[in-house]
Image (tube, rainbow, N blue to C red; front, side):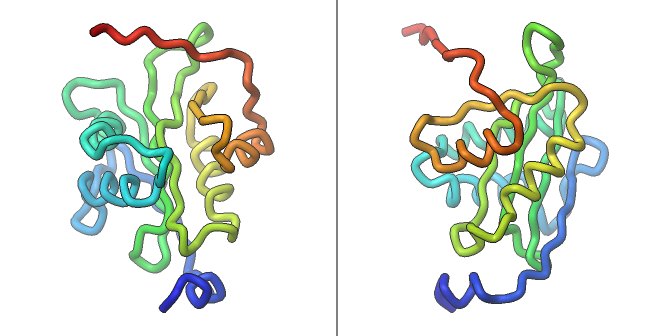
Length: 159
């Protein structure tokens, strides 16, 4: 089936929220979620091992703060993912950071990213920050959802 046929296919959409209490099951392992993000973040992605660290963080691996993951599913196939990591802070740093959001390119343009984002924002306790490149088309969705650009991010990388 090509992407045009898939876009017109009726999606049996459902969502599943995973966190340190629910964990993952055989269908949705940490590696499978990380591989989906690696495959569908396109030029806005990171190395797979970095993505896996964010997924593991959401499940409180290695004494971390935690977070949660929202899966968008077509039957049992992952078609979208949001990863939220809790920062353990409040006020001066938002309580949460939206680390990754991706939708399978065959399903884009159907509102799935917006639905995933709405679920993630409802589920998050406190403020949510995210990083987005200026040329990322998802920036418009984030602005429509109420995100603002208050700060310019600067980083110092030790050599």
